[in-house]
Amino acid sequence: MNTLAPQQDSSKSKRLRLNPEQMKICHLVRDPEIRPMIWKFHPSKRDKICQAYLKAGPNQPILDKYPFSSDTSHRRRFQASWFELYPSWLEYFIEDDVVYCLPCYLFAMESSIYTGSNAFIENGFRNWKKVALIEAMMKARVRIIEKEILHVLATMVRNSIRKDIRDAKFCIIIDEACDESKKEQMAIVLRFVDVDGFVRERFFDFVHLALVAASREVLQIHEFFTQLTAIVNIVGTSCKRHDQLQEAQEIKNAKLIANDELETGQGANQMGTLQRAGDTRWSSHFHSVCSLIRMFTVTHTILNNITDDGTTSAQRGEAYGVNKVLSSFEFIFSLHLMKEIMGITKILCQALQQKSQDILNAMHVVSTSKLLLQKLRDNGWCNLLEIVKKFCEKHEIDIPDMSTQYTDSFECSIAHYAFDIPNHLKDVGTLSELCQRLKETEKSRTYHLVDRLIRNVLTLPVSTATTERAFSAMKIVKIRLRSKMADEFLTDNLVIYIEKEIAATFSIDSIIDDFESRKKR
Image (tube, rainbow, N blue to C red; front, side):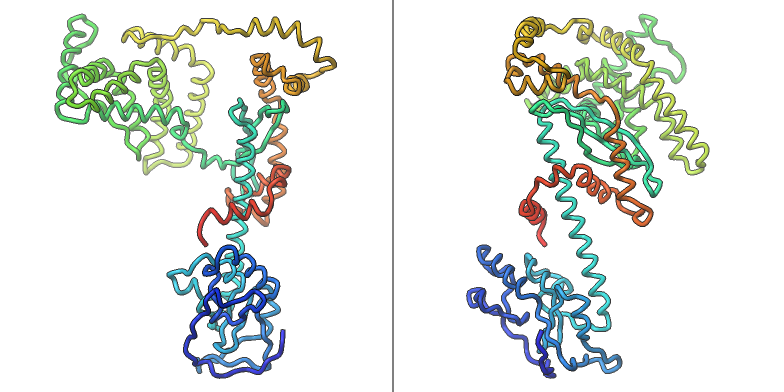
């Protein structure tokens, strides 16, 4: 840094910038007002320009006295000590008495429409009264970029894990613990057998339990409700179909009453319609499921009529598709399963929506719902399956034979395997070694069913050691001084920390390329 005499005349008109072709790498233009903007250079030359400016460093002239600002009530001026505070990025332009940010200039993608965003790149900053904002702004910007780079690397690690799993079977190991801020965190670890036959356990994510996705985020449940909505929309889309639905109900009820299968009385057997599931109230899904079960026969009849007599081929094809879904055992099973689950959670939903609800009653209802759901999970399977079978028999829906033994060429493979392997694979002591040797000798292709069986057995979790290590790492990363760390930032840190071996395989250039491709800066 050279000592220069101050130039007081700062009222010169704004000068034109040079064209990129006019500037040579060996003769860098140090004047921020006339040097070409970095995005104007050709990409082949841009990197060399950036490297040359970084090597030269920011322009930081030291003056005996810097000019005062034009504000006579609060006369302030630039301080040379600020160069010591910000030695790597702060640039000062003598003629206009303004400062710039060298890295902001070098890594800018294009000019912003907001004037304030261009202060340190094109226009210059000279509000010395708010000079403290410079440091705050730069620190905030650095923190944002650090988090973005961290997220990029964590995403690359997760993609690498997905690539290792491929289409193989994998097991999800889940455990929970409280972090420093008393949040319930759920660790997700994936256990699988890689292409070479080695058992791997990879930490994949941390999920705050309060943010665990609702059941509709499960793909199979989402598919079920999509199909349910399609059925309701087709059957109830017009007044004509609504009238047909009402007429079909009347015929059905009359037949049931004639056979003494339906009780009569005041207010009983009123005509209804299929109810739509709303997006804002989860209990509406329960009513939609119940209405379809109650009106299954007439809904099936209406869909058959639309399939045969629809006005357009699109209507007929759509009705045929949803009718095929409606008549499948898988859909009927999901229909009754959702009825059982939502019948338990309906009371919970209604209780939590009451304005006068207190925390003690809410906790009691939540505990009761959890116990009933656990009871359904432990002891309700046989009863549910029996209800589904009776429903399918009543409506003449094919029921898969669940007692049929799975047959394949597995027995033949076992016979050849038992005779061949002992002669070729000796001194194999564990299943993991056997899986690896089958891969090395390419016997896994010959006995692919045996190899698949071994891999599935190895995929089964044996312990929760990996999840416990994840919690130990969480206590190292999220301490009392960092108790307000955001969940995404915590997860990205832990993915890179725990799976450091994978993170170390990525080059700096690949991280920079991924970071740059995410958005314009």
